[in-house]
Each structure stands twice: as C-alpha cells, then as structure tokens.
Image 1 (spheres, rainbow, N blue to C red):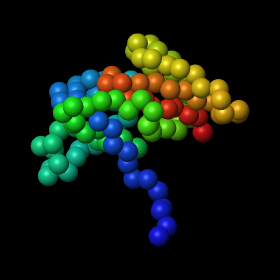
Image 2: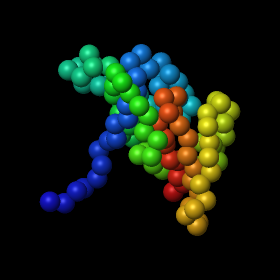
Image 3: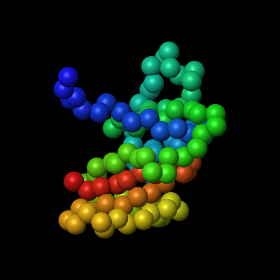
Length: 116
C-alpha cells in the first residue's frame, strides 16, 4: 500500500459551536466553508477547504498536543490576524529556519501555522 496524501483532518467542537467555529476558521483564518454531503448534515459540524473538518462531540475535550499544521505563505500576516482577533499566539523557534507558531481555536484545539 502507498499512502498518496491526507484527505482531511477532523477536529472536535462542542454542540452549538458552529457560530464560533465559522468566525474563527472562516473569518479569522480565512478558510472557505464547503457544504457537507446531505446525508452528513444532520450530524452538525462543518467542513472547510484545505481539509479541515469540524465534528460535533458531546463531551468534547480539546486536543492540546495532537494538532494539524496549516502551511501558509505568510506566517506574520496570519499571526497578526489572530492577535487582532484576540486569539492566542505562541511563536515556535525550535526548528531552525522554519517560521511557525501555535494558536488555539475557540474550543482549545491546538493548531500549528507554518510558512512554506
């Protein structure tokens, strides 16, 4: 078997978290929401371009270590948008020559932002 690529990553959000998720992932990060297939819509949650899927989990606990890493073309502009929106940002300088940092979504899930 040969793995070709990762199709998507799913993160958990609590019931009723869709509005906060749309603000953070859509407005702050600038990801475009894509419609879920009709058969899956009743489950709640949402999908965004780039393979970020958010699913409802009743007793949701944030992923504090496990995280997706989003590759961007300008870490500084993403950092500035996050900070301006009141989001947490922590620079990561432990990989020489790689510009990156970490934030958390409104539910406490960790996200890495790294520059290509």
